[in-house]
Length: 102
Image (tube, rainbow, N blue to C red; front, side, top):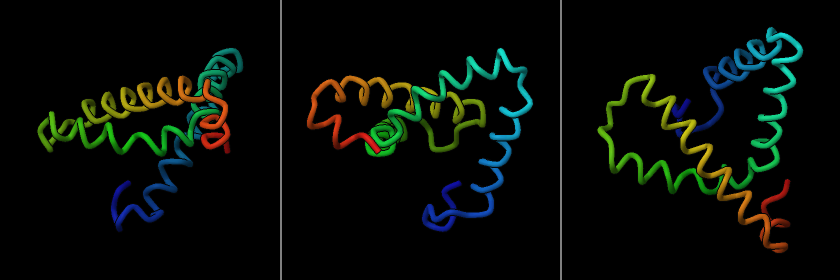
């Protein structure tokens, strides 16, 4: 939800509530697998937040500005994965780990 100069909007709130609702309806065993995956992202979210803009700029330079919803979802997941792996690697350096830990 990048409307209003990326300030929080009702759209962002509804997306967050919808996401939590979907996860709450998953069966417990599947829910636990998703929670383990989400924990990896949660532990690295500061790095994802800091580094994602670089990859968004690169991707926008390589693709058309009109991307389908499926294409945008794919690019979002790809950028999240790349920045998470980069953050996990950088956290091996003690000083950087301290800076990237919330």
